[in-house]
Length: 214
Ligand SMILES: [Mg+2]
Ligand SMILES: [Zn+2]
Image 1 (cartoon, rainbow, N blue to C red):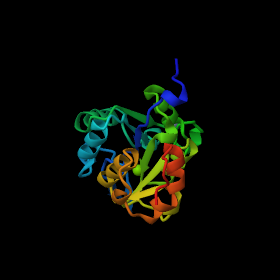
Image 2 (image 1 turned 90 degrees about the vertical axis):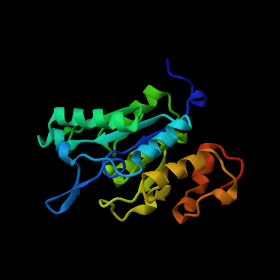
Image 3 (image 1 turned 180 degrees about the horizontal axis):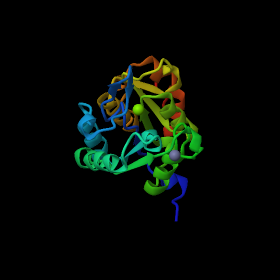
């Protein structure tokens, strides 16, 4: 039986490629790995996930993998990638959309199906949870369900920073920002960031902070 909203907990939803996993340069673009030989974690990913989990936050991965639908990625290869991801990062779960645009599914970001599935399985209060991604699709999916959104810099970055609540240089900085925000550290410890400041009211409202973030 689902818990009432006030009993649900915050969690962290992480995009995979460009956030936890290195992008691959192919045919003039930064894209997702298709072979095991191309699959590598970004520096700081394991430490960031460990810090978040040590703080008691469920950490789940929400990833679009349209190369499955396009026949460019083998199912077994993806399964092995995710076995490694789970083993090396210790994430609580990995949610995959295997579809492409033409499938019209409910899970391909910017649609929020993967986030809703994670919220159901982990009793998450999405309005107090963070979505970390490197593409507008991630941020849009997070915003669609009221998450606080963190945009991390990646080679695939498009110039749409204003849409996310926070920006961070990478997964390590994102984890730091999430922990500082959720732990309500004193004002002087808060990260000075113009994007964060613009989002301050939304953050305060979502987290029920007594004092507005400056
Ligand atoms: Mg990505
Ligand atoms: Zn899907």
